[in-house]
Structures are given as structure tokens and as C-alpha cells.
Length: 295
Length: 294
Image (cartoon, rainbow over all chains, first blue to last red; front, top):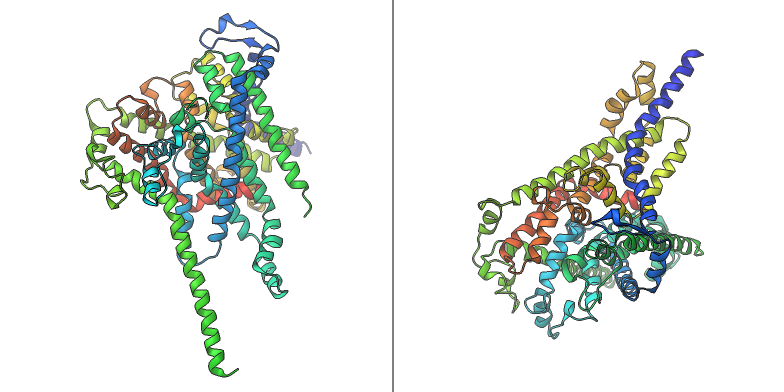
């Protein structure tokens, strides 16, 4: 008896020992910063001179709701997301449907469509910044060669965000494709065969078998794409810096600029907290709405 | 219907299917141009002399994509000119990525093993806590994390880019799933023989789990190789600068050396591309498991 309890005690001890390094790291670099963000957001907190901080209470939060530029950044972010999420998700679904059959050479196409996901965001941003140049860019050259007049693209306040949405769909569509492809391949072929025998058309098979059974991976893709769209930062930093005329000023870039250019860490933290709460509720709402849909 | 008519009907169906298959290939090939052409253009431009970089962009022809005067000088100048820091940037990125993968795999798989197999009070609660960190976007804690590492005196060091990225809830989750699929009998024999858990972990579990460890390791490597926002915030000196920051600095300059920029971009793209082609199977496995189970 004594021996068993000693073994048991040893296992408990080992268990804590094994999870301890991960837990310490997650606490120091995850939970503590999260709490610290709440604390900092209550202060006027100069980044370069923290000793001169000053307690403000909820003033930073009140200010956030009155900040016109912040409102613009938020609207821009939502507008961008409304372009990018459907584009990337639907294109991903289309590509997944194209390459789902195991026909000869299909792996070349699967790999090819996935390539942009593999390179870094900075590389993609630099590459597209050069290609999208309105004077010397490859994109305008291609447009002219198919008889479309040159476009201002990133230099236009109207076209800049949709252009970025297109660029980031190019970058991430392979991710949506891959997840949805795995979903498509997990649907048993008997379902389609049975439906075909019953006389269901290709469209009916797609609508009543494929779409309902793609719900789980589809949900994952939509939620992931949404969160990523709202976290847009690197292309803004590398390509547009928020311009022209604040037309590509988005939330994370705004937070970054407040903290590191304008030295306002407290205010930036308040915005970061509000935006995180918004993002988490958005993801939760999506999960709820899409899950509760009748089958 | 005569035999002749039947035969011609089947032939028609046959050729109709062939036509559809052909159309599918045409469509797939056309769509392949979108991801592949920018890559060809990028690698092509990296091998052009500086005078030629934008010369053939318009009008569109084969010269737009294939260098007319092929040269490797851009790479040689970038990497080997006197005082060039590019070898250093590449080393920094590789060092940070590899260290994070090795140390992170150890930390995460140990935790994942405990969560999968060992029984201790509070286990499920702790696992839930770990999972909670998946929801927190890194961008949300980047600012306070900056305060933490500044307090530790870690600005402009390697560890500032490694330590916060070691423990990863997502890797722990995936590895735990994998460990739970390993039959318990394999361990029980070793326990009867008196082997400790640490020995079981290293001698039985790890050798069986390479696919899962490689999958999570690749995801970690790519995340670290691509990291931009965090290194941008916490480093400024060239000694610890990573390649992504160096590339983005190049384009910010007033007089951009376009040929060197293309060479730098090509190098930064090459490392993950090579890894992707070597480990493609593990790579897609990791991504799709996350989608189907997450």
C-alpha cells in the first residue's frame, strides 16, 4: 500500500514538474502582460519616461470613444475586413473544389496555389509594394496589356484598401484552400453516389451535401480569416504607412503609432484592450451564429 | 438503337468528359499564374543588373520576367561586400528560429505529455488555462510585454525574441492529441520494469512522435522566421537585427538599391520555401489537423 501511494505521489510531482516550464513561460509572457495592460491603460504613461506616469482613471477609455481618428481607423479596418474575408474564403472554397479530385498532376496545382502562404508577410508586402507602383508596377503593365486603363491603386484613397484586401487574399487564400480541401476529402463518396442514384443534380449535391458537411472546417476558416483581417499590420507598415490621407489607417497600426511614435503607452493600451474585447466577442458571436444554423 | 449508334453515343460522352477534363486543366493552369508569376518576377529581378530592373516592366513581354543580362552580382554584393551585415541578419533569423523550435518543442511536448498521460490535481484546469492563451491575440499583449522585457533589461538581445515564443498553447494542444493516440501498453511495460517518466518520455514517446513534433516545429519555425512586429518593437541595433526588419528597412530608404532589395527579398523567401518543399507532407498535416480539430 505504502509503495503505491509513493508511486502516486511521484506521479503528481512529475506531472507538475513537466508542465511547470510551459506554465511559467505562459504566465510571465502571457498572463502578467495581460494584467499589466489593464493597469497601464489607467495612466498617462509616457513610453520613454515611465517614472512620469500619472493616474487618469478611465479617462483613456473615454478619450478612445471621442477620438475621431480612432473611429476612422476602426471603420477602415471593418471596411477592409468586409472585402478580404469573403474574397479569401470564397476563392479558397473555389480552389479547393477545383483540386479536390485526385487527377494526374493535381499536386502541382495544390502546391502552386499554396506558395504565397509560405513566404513571410514582409516579403509579400515588399514584393507587392513594387508590383503595385502606379508608374513602374507590374500590375498596371498587365492591366494595360489586356486593355484596362492604368489604375492609381495604392495612391488612391478609394482603391488603396480594396487593393490591399486583394493582395492579402493572394497571400492567404492557400490557407483557406488547404483547410477546406481537407474538409472536402473527409466527406464519404457514398453520399454523392447515393444522391446521384436518386437523381440529384451536381448543384443539388453541392448545396445539400458538400456545404452542410463543410460547416466545421468552414467555420474555422471564417473565424481565422476574420481575426487575421482585423489584425492587419505588416503590409500597412511596409507599404502605405496608413496613407494616402489616412485611408489605410487600421487599428493595430494606430495602436502601434500611438505607443511608439507618439509616446502614449497608456492610451495605446486602453485601445488595445478595447480592440481585444471586440475581437474576442466577434469570434464568439461568429461561432454562435454559424453553429446555431439549422442543419 | 443499332450497335453503331450506341458506339457513337458512348464515344460522344467519352469525348465530352475529355473536354471537361481539358477545360479543368486550362482553368487550373490559368489560376496558377496568379500565385506563380509574382515569384518568377521576384527571382528574375534578383538576377538583373540594376539598370535593367524596371526597364522591361512595360510593355509586357518575356523580358518582363526573364533577365536579359543574367547576373549573380546582386547576391555577391549583398552578402560579401566589405562590412556587409547581411550574413549576420540571416544568421540571427536562423539562430532565433532554430533555438525556438528546439527549446520550444521540449517545453511544449513535456507539458503535452503530462496533460495527456499523468494524473495530478488541477490538471484539467491548468490545461484550460493554457488553451485560453490561444484566444489572446499577440498584438494585444505586445505593448505590456514590451514593458516586461524592458524591465528585465532584455531590449536588443536574442532572448527577447526567443523566450516569449517558447511556450505555445497551440503546439501543446496538437502534441497532446498525438500523445493520447499512442497505446498505453507501450509505456506500461516500461513502468513495470521500473523506468521513470522522464525516461519513458525520451525513449518511448518522443521516437514515436516525430511527425507531430516536426509539424509543430515547422509552424513555429515559420512564425519565428516571419516575425516582424515584435522584433520591430524590441530591437534596434544591427547586431541582433533579423532579416525581415532588414528587408523592410531597405525599402524605406530614399535611394533604394533595387537590385540589392530584390536579392534580399529572394533570400528571405528562399529559406521557408526550401523547408516547405522538403517537409511538405508534415507541413500540410500540421495545418489541416489544426483546422479539423481546432
